[in-house]
Image 1 (cartoon, rainbow, N blue to C red):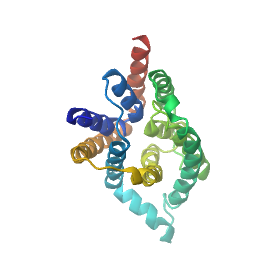
Image 2 (cartoon, rainbow, N blue to C red; image 1 turned 90 degrees about the vertical axis):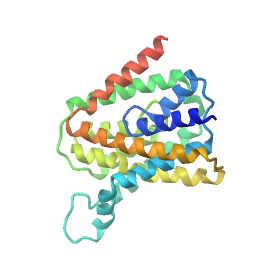
Image 3 (cartoon, rainbow, N blue to C red; image 1 turned 60 degrees about the vertical axis):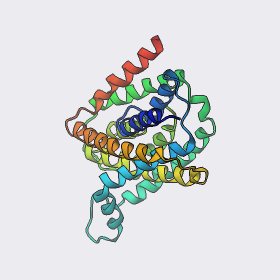
Image 4 (cartoon, rainbow, N blue to C red; image 1 turned 180 degrees about the vertical axis):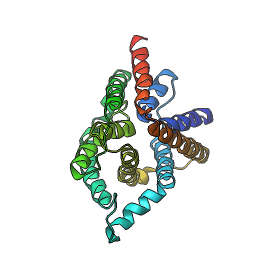
Amino acid sequence: MGILEALLLAIVQGVAEWLPISSSGHLVLFEHFLNIKEASLSFDIFLHLASLGVIFLFFKKEIIEIIKAPFNSQKQEKENWWWYVVISSIFTAIIGYFLYERIDSFRTVSSVTNWLLISSLLLLATKFSKGEKSLNWKHAVLLGIIQGFAVLPGLSRSGAVIALALILKIKKQQAFEYGFIVAIPAMFGSFLLTVKDFVFEPIYIFAFILTFIIGYLSLKVLNILMKRDYFYMFFVYTLLMSLIIKLT
């Protein structure tokens, strides 16, 4: 993989990992249409490590609050979130494990466009869902399940989890925060399982920095759009992307 290819994929990862447009789906499409060789496992590991760092930096206050909540005598909104993350992660791991064994069959342009269409429907549905419910264990189960299915390229992990949370009428800010915090165990577990095969190359440093910076800015943008109730608008992009590719 050349320098320009590595940096291009780093940009795609930084933008699409957090916006609800599917980073894995975009990587499949970029590799296909730009004739880029599939990224090495080591490169993928390094980019996801950068994305994991973005979550810790962006949500540091919320993560500390969740960790401290069980030891705080006063009732808090996030007092059970650590338990909900465990519940979600169990279901994510079960579904993700069985799908991951067949993941190569989904790494096709046709499959990606189909899952982009499904993402579009989920995103559009959030426009009609307003609610003030707080997260509970039943929500955690459903969100863990859909996060497991999001290993499929074209189905955005953040998009699917946040969209379903909004459809379940969970508070907007809770949906946003949980949608990313619940990704930590999944991303960290994936890193631990694959780090033994890691082989370092100098270009990874530049790709890591680029992914981290762009990823952080993407999260900032998404947070602003969520607060202004524009989250659903991403359906326009995923729908057009899917239809254009299907027609070409």
